[in-house]
Image (tube, rainbow, N blue to C red; front, side, top):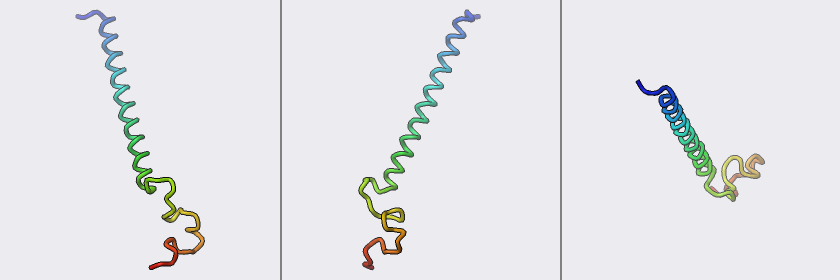
Length: 67
């Protein structure tokens, strides 16, 4: 049987590695959702299209009235 102190050190190391893996996975998901949000919004901050564009709720067509 191994030394109890060594076993505890190994257990703590496994727990730390597992925690780091979970944190890395969570960080990846946060970045993936952030990137997906940017892409979905048009990819650039100057995009003035879509239902949330200024004037979109005023009843005016978003494309200036052109068919």
